Length: 441
Image (cartoon, rainbow, N blue to C red; front, side, top):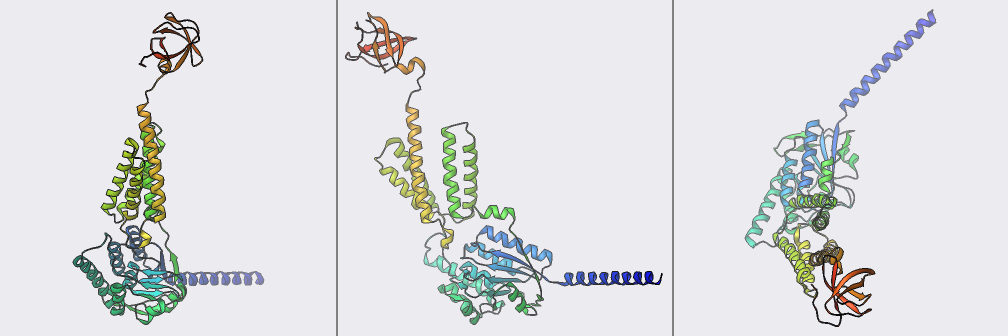
């Protein structure tokens, strides 16, 4: 009985110890800081701007200690950069921009995003800068160019000062496209630290007091922080794919050919539906990108040249002109501030030649088919050769295409003579000796 009592006491003690340990671990888990992480390895454009907006909104809603943006971008559109920089500075949760992994860069518009962050950091063997503004629509006049550059530099200067970073070095990247290694950026006070990985970065930031844009001070508590990686939504993945200019152009050209096939062979449905979807996706993607309207005119001219070649024939000159217009139109269609946002020359040339030749062939076949009269039954025999099976005086039987027909000759015909079918009356053929003068009806 005593042993049983001792067993119950031991079991109760273990149970209470377990509850205490569970409560302690739950409290420790509740106190563990959470840092949400977004991986940004794309060009700066409307879709990526929307992705950053969502990440910032989620970090604010979840009450995360910070939002970590792993950045690797060649740059992108000026308007999208302004929007993203404003979103970073407007976040209630501190935003840490970390140029990583090794070999990554914060080029052009990416440099502005890095400088807009509450904390700017870089991994070893990375670089940032080359942030001079490039016109999206070709060469601007001197006054307009100066206005755009001054506006971008003022935008950069406005928050570099509040982040206590070196204004002169930042403006050198914007004004003269200077680029910095991680070590140079740290030495110039453009970033706050260099870190090998996320864990080292957060450990170094623990306890650091940062200055927000509004001038308030905030101490970061990131020791042992749990990093939660934010995944792209299905919508972002679907939108990000066609925004690639090369993909958008392939969708546009492929869709146009499928729609043409539907018009040429009505009722097939599938080519028309698929082609329409592809063209709409391409138009949606191109609408998000800066488009040169002179390039659109070149594409229209290319189509006109190809149609004229197919209709009237130009000994290939019109076709070549159309393909050249198509190539130059594709190459200049997207006013890309960085090469990564432009259409690849290889894609432009190969698609132009293939599209031009296929369109030329299809249009010629369609035009030729429209000029050929549809002939069925006895109509198909008009113009064919025949052979008299017996004397025709003037009526008799003839052999046409292996078939025996009743025929009436325009003049007496001897058996075995070669004839030409010139017409018919119902199922009686009219034939003429090949040597004789006559006309085919």
